[in-house]
Image (cartoon, rainbow, N blue to C red; front, side, top):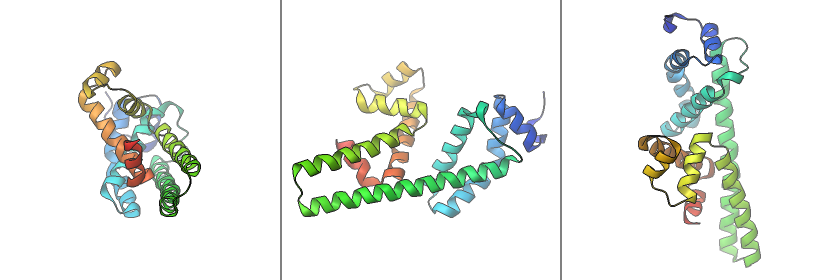
Length: 191
């Protein structure tokens, strides 16, 4: 058995692309700290930085067979983190715009038709962000949101542990809150 700790980035990347769990774990342990610090310095929030890194490694594993990594792995990972941060900033700007528009609506007392149009826009934004969640997390979230199933029942239906369901729900809500802002998530939960 090969000691993955002694492998180069290129060798680990090749093993990752073929679905090697040990190579993925080594990549995670080798780079998670550096990537976390990189993300934290840019976002200034520990939980958000952890979420970014968690999301990166989740996608890295889910798409391991279709990765197009040329050259060294670490620059690829840094670029992926930077892109995730830029995506979050862009989403937060869109969410902030919707929140501002919603506040203006409340302040101005618009007509019911205007309210419906804004609510539809807000719902579309929320649905888009839900669709961007990782597949299993999205499935757990939608089952929790759209059914009366308990955490245990969702776990049984998806053949997951109850802790995994809880973790997916926690990360889904945290991700949506980070992307959409707390007011939008509150509106979503009340709707």
